[in-house]
Image (cartoon, rainbow, N blue to C red; front, side, top):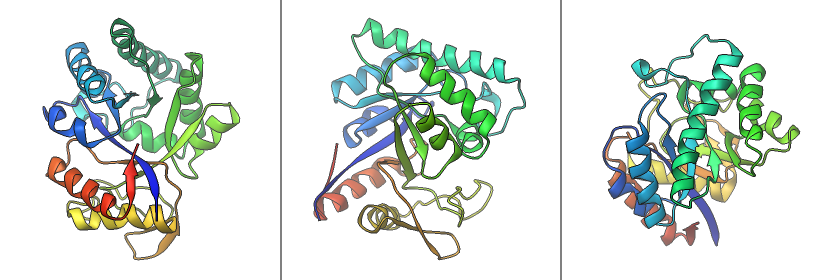
Length: 245
């Protein structure tokens, strides 16, 4: 089997491991200051991405550093719209200074999960992305509400799946509060990605196989042994004639 996939990673979140991760991925999602990061970290990660020819994406969030953007915030739609716009603009300002381009937008944490099922939230995110007038791609889950809203609005979508998270039968991610939420074992991580690439299926937490389409696969930058796991994943993928682009 010959195939090519995108591997993305959430970066600029205070882990300090970006220099080790960047050579191992093909796209990155840079925290824009709302859940983590600031202008200085954004600039550092942009420099690394450009050096390694890694596609650059914005990783906006609910404005909630206290909870790392992993709790749903009850805020008015207009306030959320303004926050997301400001976050993406902050990264784009840095990119403009460095003659770089924004490739995609990927919501973070609770915003990502809420927009996957809540139409009102999805519409806000899509409106913000569309409002920039570029051809930015939206990274979104397969069969999610936000992917459907984006396509209806003419916003290009890449379906995203997670290499290091377990799934429920409805293709939602197992909650981080659950002991089986995360995948730390590198062989299990590869098996999950390979099954999705080769069979178009994911094995859920209950052991049931469900159809899954994915164009890009995320490995979290704050994950346990993330550098070693990415190295292992890349090696195993190449051994199965799957390249990264």
